[in-house]
Amino acid sequence: MNIDMLLLYTLVAFFYVISPGPAVFLAISNCLSNNLKAVAYSSLGNISGLFILSSVSMLGLGAILMTSASLFLAVKVIGALYLLYLGIKQIRMAGKAKMTANGQLNIPTKSMSKYFQEGFILASTNPKAILFFTALFPQFLQLEANVGLQFFSMTGIFMLLSFGSLMSYAMIFKHAKSALTKGQRMAWFHRITGGLFIGMSAVLLQLKNNN
Image (cartoon, rainbow, N blue to C red; front, side, top):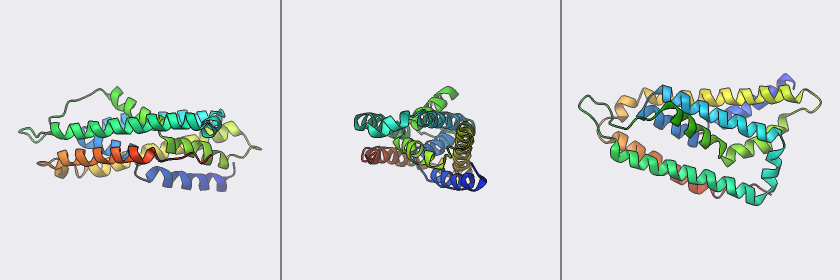
């Protein structure tokens, strides 16, 4: 792959990953309800899921997924149901977001592996990411060059951009954490985030594989 093609791919991938989506809202929520460590684990889970999707695309299974309406529908429904689950979970968290005397939130903690798992499932069941790796990703591959090297380079760039984007969003909202966690603001944040997850779940069900 020549440098011009790689730069073009990086530009396309950059604009794809910075657009707000489920992973971004999850990162922001984890930052506000926990800390950047939780976001890092969730983001690592996210990019691990993206690596799986990229590998599936390279193995040719992505083409099967794109041409099979029933298989695509199954993945889409699973992804939508998971977003719905996250939305309901966020709304339930709104009722638990009570302030303690020292100004900290009384929200039950969970292990870092749970944050990783959430990020992984969210990424690996995201039909939009599947569409990227099966329809757009292969367009940048040059078959006359080392395909394996191109795969690891392009996937690595996408993973780094995704991780950096999620952490950047989280760090931006970290500075607003003290303001958002006053009074009922955190509860409203969870309600709004939950509503967004549920809304994205409904939108996801409208996504087509264009076949």
